[in-house]
Image 1 (tube, helix red, strand yellow):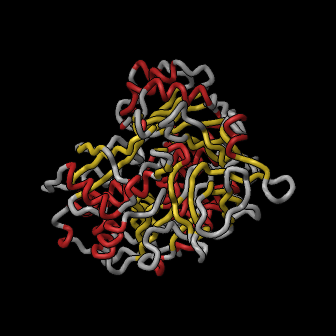
Image 2 (cartoon, helix red, strand yellow):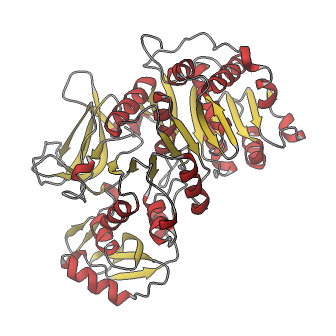
Image 3 (cartoon, rainbow, N blue to C red):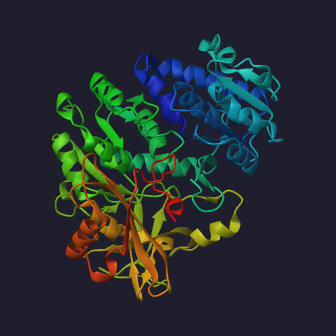
Length: 518
C-alpha cells in the first residue's frame, strides 16, 4: 500500500495479500480479489482513455451487483469522483443528478436502459457511457456518446495496469446524494480522507477481521450499504451481495450457506424478521455482530435480535450522510441504556448547543455538533446550504457539522436522539419530539411500525397524529392506541388522531418519508 493511502488502495492491497480469496458473492457469481482488481484496472484505463480526467464525476447506475462494485473501485482508480445512484431512480431525477454534478461518464446496467438512455440524452457533459448485462447493444444505447460494453472492455483484462496515480487524500472520492425528501437532492462531498477515516473508525469498534463474511443487502447507493463493501475490502473479507430484503427467506438461506458473520440492517428489515414464524429453522450461530444506524433501535427489536442471534453483539448506531457515523452504543451497554445511541465513534468529538450556540451540559436538549475528519467537505455547488451546516469550530480554520438534529446527553456522556429540528411538533405551547411518541406506540403489543407528524389545528396550533402499521393478525383500534399512550406519555404527547395504514411511505433506503404522510 502507498505511504499515504487512498480509498481504492483497500482493493489493491487485499488483491496483493489474498489474490485467490473470494471478495464478492452474488447469486451464482463468486469473484476473487485478484480478478476484481484486474478488472477494475481495465475499466479505469478505459475510462481515462475515453476522456475521464482527475476530479471528473462518474455516475454508476446499478443494483447490488458485482459490476456495480467493480465500477466503484475503477472510477477511483481513474482518479475520478464516484457517485452510485439507486436503480429505482426515475429518468427525470437521474437526468437532474447527471447534470447537477456534470458527469463525464455513466456506467449503467443495461436492464435499466429505459431509464438511463433518456436521462443520458439530456446530459450534455457526458463523454462516455458504459453498459453491462444483457441487452447492451440496442440501437438507443449505441447512439449514446462514447458508448461501449463493459464486457468488451474487460475482455483480456488480465494484464491491465492501474492508471497513473494523481489523486491526493484531500481530493473528492465520492458524491453521495441525499434522498431529497424535502427539496432537490444534495450531493454530499466526501474526500478520500473522510471515507478512510470513517472506515477505520467503524471497523475498529466493530472489530472487523479478515475472515469476516458481511451481508450486503442494503443498496450500495446508500452510504450504510456502501461502507459494508469498503470495510470488507479494507480487511480482505468477503461481501455477500443481495439486491434487497424483499425475499427474506432467500436472503436468510444465503446467510446460512455463506456463514455470514456481520448482519447490517435497518428497522424495516428487523420489523420483517419479527413477523417471520420459521426463524428457528435457521442456524445463525456464525453471526458475530448485528448493526443498525440512523436512530436507536426500538426496545422490542433489541429483544427480538438478542433472541434470534444469542451469540451476536448488537450495535445500535446513529449517523447521517454528512459525516457517515457519529455514535455507537457499545453492546455491553445495550441492556443498561437501550434507548441511547451511545458515545462518539473513535476520532470524533460531539457536543450540544442551544439556539444561541452555547454549549449545553448533561440532560439538556440541543442541536448536535460533530467535529472530526469524517465531516463532509460540503454540498456540491450549494454554498448557502453548506454554510448552514458547516460553521467555524473551536480551532482556527476548522469547520464542524451542525447536524440539525436535537439530542440530549446523560450524566455518563451517552447520547439520546430526540428529533430532527424540522420534525418538532408545537402543540398547546409544548414541543413534541415525534420519536418519543413513536417509541411509545412501538412498545404496544401488536404494533409493527409507527410514524408521528404534526397537522394544523385551530385550537392546538398543531395536533399530534400517529400513523400505525399493525403486525400480521393483530387487532387494535384507535382507542386502544390512545389509551396505551396515555399510560406511557405525558398528556400533551398523546396523539389526538390515529390512522392505521398497511405500510409507511419510505425512501429507497428504508427511511420513512413524513412528507408523504402529510
